Image 1 (cartoon, rainbow, N blue to C red):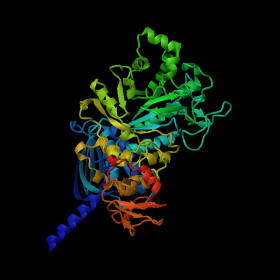
Image 2 (image 1 turned 45 degrees about the vertical axis):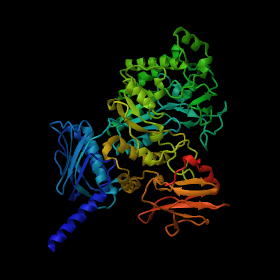
Image 3 (image 1 turned 30 degrees about the vertical axis):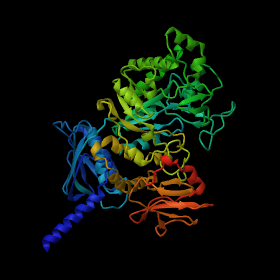
Image 4 (image 1 turned 135 degrees about the vertical axis):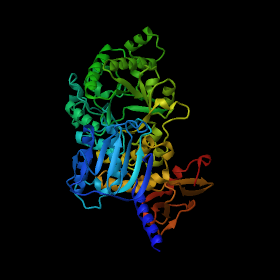
Length: 633
């Protein structure tokens, strides 16, 4: 009897802690034990080498903030952060081990980065209240575990576009801190574009006195009125060089490299508004774009610009200008790479330019793609003179590429495959999987239901960065990209980023064989609760029903193909709000003719988890695919 009771208690404690351990990204090895370590007041966090002290201080500050305790750092402690005396080759530069028992917690690593990532795991093991910015009462127990962990990829990035909408210094730091919690190590900072130049270049003051500001507009991006000649430009901002140094140091303290991007030769309207002589038309009326439409996209990737937003590749003054820009940037950013864009460069004004035609004829260039290739190689040489390497979007391949340049593959994976086969290093960031500005749920309930692509959470999680046809050694890793045309605030940037960046963190960190969609989904609720405690915004779109209409003859049939398979979907057709007492949709239902609205809602484990989706019969018919494309699960 006693023996049976003992076994029952053991299993109960163990299972409770197993449910509480919901780590993202999933570690390489995780073993659970009964019991746990109690965090108490006046606890000491120890460190064995000076390089570990700042990480111990980060941990102590985090604990003290939420607990109200007076945890301190010292050479010894019940929580110990240790740099290995003998290198563990399997852990590499960013791996760690974490062992917690009822008596102590030990985190060990070869290098400080590994200790930092071990601390992030430790914080996820703590109760969700650890994320609070104010004192809160909780049972501050860490479950007993043994973890051995290291990343799959060296490059794990998130890109934030601050040109389309300006984010303050403090907002950028907050965003960096949020991604650092999920073991990202690259912050790609998109600093310039048609809608604003955000970095101070002291030798070129007009870039910020003019290029950082545009006329204010409110409403739907892409539909705004073009700026009037006498209209004041009051919307925008920029980062001083002191701001940038502060942000770079803040990121370095979290073992994140800041990768700056100045997008050239296209996407340069803010620079051209500042210095019109840099473009072929030399048009002095060009102004920073406020979000108005200035291009036509007839399809197949082709487009026509009504405003000249490309630098002139035939003008030596352009290269002198860029030399000044990159000289000052190189001094600000320790990153070995500087991103130079290279995407979506409109060459129509080049084709009309006599100077460009002469250059192409003298150099025996067959097309303007080769002219862009010449431009990019000149830029690569400028960067090389600053001891920096060039990285750009996959269009930089089209006109030939210098041997040291790296490529970000965004138009699918084909550019990355081509670059890797040529021996270039590649960061895989294809828009079907990693563009987190795109719609993530049903268009009827998402902020931007008209987005040209649909990138749900499960799509992000399914991404495999290494194509079968390339040598994995050329794939540095991958990243998520957040373009901010439709993200005017940090809160909405967070909504678009999370949980999709959580899913991609597991893609880039965890072993390929450890990825498990069902297990990842089971971890989401815990991380949503942690985000709530931290006051970080996120989307719950993964829980929403996904209607799948199909015309069967003249009948309109609708089923669901939800991202999460173990949800129950309930529906109504009588204008009432659905709940778990409504009809359950277990197979496709016929939608009768007339002014009928289908309303759907999802439950999981008897709990309502999704938003109510309301779709008219007309909307469902418009979504129904052709017969051969239809599939209803």
